[in-house]
Amino acid sequence: MSRVLIIGAGGVGSVVTHKCAQVPEVFSEIVLASRTLEKCIRIKKQLDRPIEVARVDADNTRELISLIRKVSPDLIINVALPYQDLSIMDACLETGVHYLDTANYEPPDEARFCYKWQWDYHDRFKERNIVALLGCGFDPGVTNVFCAHAQKYHFDEIHYIDIMDCNAGDHGQPFATNFNPEINIREITQRGKYYENGRWIETDPLSVHSTFDFPEIGPRKMYLMYHEELESLVKNIPTIKRIRFWMTFTDEYLTHLRVLQNVGLTRIDPISFKGCEIVPLQFLKALLPDPGSLAETYKGKTCIGCMIEGIKDGRKKKYYIYNVCDHKACYREVKSQAVSYTTGVPAMIGAMLMLTGIWKAAGVYNVEEFDPTPFMEKLPVYGLPWTEKFIE
Image 1: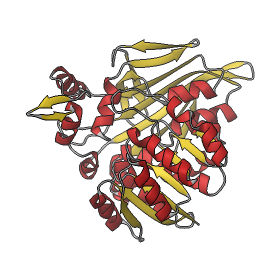
Image 2: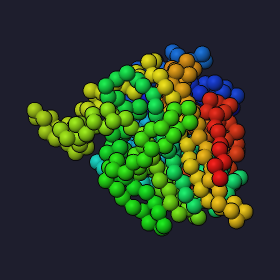
Image 3: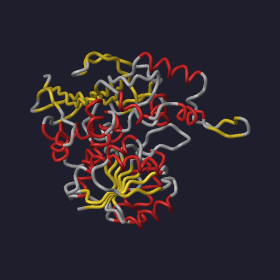
């Protein structure tokens, strides 16, 4: 029986709240907080059990501390913006509350993934005897756990990992992003990067592509990108020789993105407009559809998984583990599309394992540093079944 504070009432926050509400034996009390109270109230009305709602500015550490002391949660689930990770972690340190997020910290003025900012909190969290669990969504999150599961059961040494994320859904909009447009576009337009033979190799944005036949979807073109789980998996799988991250995009999506870049609407530096200072990407975000509004008409499936190669008992082995998720099924269950669902469900599972003492530590950790088995067992129970194939 635990009290949880969920910060963030966007698409993922809605899924996390719905899924926590389905498990009252663990999440006996739920508080949902956001800068926009109306979003919290809308989610509250969708639920079959009562929850509390509150307004909070997650950029304001003192305001967060005040809310935490008022609410007295056992755990904070941070599904706000990545810019706000450090302010929320600071509030957790001050109040002695456990922390979980789904995406690593990113500075507002630079599109750059890096765990160092959060890993630097390790000693302080350890001294406070609290835990921060980083990147507990799907990618990062489940993909990390897939790798830990493979390392535990199927490989003596893991040498190669390709993380492949395909969204083959159709939302019917000319151009829209599946999660926060500002974060999504910053992620896609930065330089690609992968790890090979002990060094990081950079590529021009979306300049490297390949085609893969995704289960239940079919062949799709996927593009090499940098994603934060690469950084932690290189650290925590010492035998790795190469690891890459790939994501699919349609030609139509990339054409829209290229036009927006060419006219300067993806810029993150402030500009002056009629005496006001605005950030073009934030202005674009205001014009684009809210990702949560896409759910009702979304159709199709996502497929996210890991292709892993290495050695077992002295022999080469190749193995593929993945999840397929249906947009319409997600909407029927929690009024969400599959991209939010696949991020929100793992956050709830990670929180459950922390609150029940199955995942227990002090300090700052990524999900692959814990025993993957209880997490893997709960994925199909709560809506994310996985399949594994042994290729050779």
